[in-house]
Amino acid sequence: MLLALFFTNCARVLTESSVNQPDYNVTEQKKTTDKTTIQDAASAEVPVLEKFFTANTPYRWVSYRAVMDFSLKNSRYSFQIFYVNRIDSIIYVNIHISGIELARLVATPQEVIFVNKMTKEFYKGDYKFLSTMLDFPVNFYMVQSLFNGIDFKNFGSNFVRLSQETDLQWVANRRCHVTDDICFHQFLTFNNSLQLQKNHLEMEQPKRIFIMEYRNYTESEFLFFNGFSVDIPHISLKGTGELRNLKFNTPTTTNIKIPDSFTPIKP
Image (cartoon, rainbow, N blue to C red; front, side):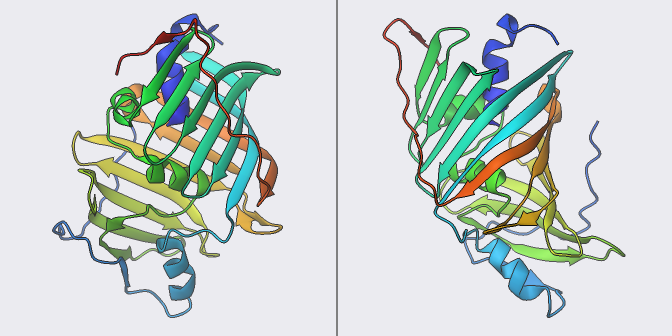
C-alpha cells in the first residue's frame, strides 16, 4: 500500500521500465466488536491459529530490506525498500534505487508523513490521503499487519473454516473495525504448517479487492516470510518483494525531514 502511494504520486516522472473473487459461501454476519473466535478447527490447529488471530508479535522491532519488482498499468519498476517497524508505534519506509533515495515515509497510529524526492512534494496529516490514493480506507494497524503477516488489530468477527483437501482456508464474511468506519470480507489461506499464504480482502465501501501473499518462511529468531506479492486490481498494481537482512529487536533510524523547498500535497 505504501508503494502504491509512491507510484500514483510520482509515476509520471519515473522511467517506464481480473482477480477472481473467492466463493465465501457463509451467511453474512452483523457488525460485531466481539473477540474473534475460531470455529470448526482441528484441535492441533487451534493454538497456532489463535496466536495469529490475536495479532500480537513476539518481537518489538522488525526491519528488513527488500528487492521489489512492480508493475503499475503499463509501466514496470524495480527498486529497493528499507522497512522498519516498532510494533504499534511507528513504521518507516525508505524507497531507493542503487542507493539514491526516491521517497521516504514515516507513519504512526495518528499521522502519516510522506516525502517524495522525485517530485519534491510532501504530505503530513492523517490517513485520509493514503486512503484516497488507494481508494479504500486503511489505518496504521492494517499496514503494520500486512507487512508482518499477522491479523488486523481491533477488528471483530467470527472466522469459519472452509473444507479443503490441502490448504487450510478461513473466511469472515464481514469484519468491521471497533471504532473506525472500515468493514470488509476476508479470506485467509494457510498451508499445512499453519503459515499464512494469502490474505484476500474485499472492502465493503467502496467495493475494492486487495490481495497479499506470503512465501518462503524460515525461522531464525522468529518465524517470518522471506517473500511476498501484492495485487491491487482497481489501480492495476501488481508486485513482488524478496526480503534481505531481516532483523528483530534491533532499533534503528526512523527519522524524516521535510525540506523547506518542497511543496505540500493536498489530500
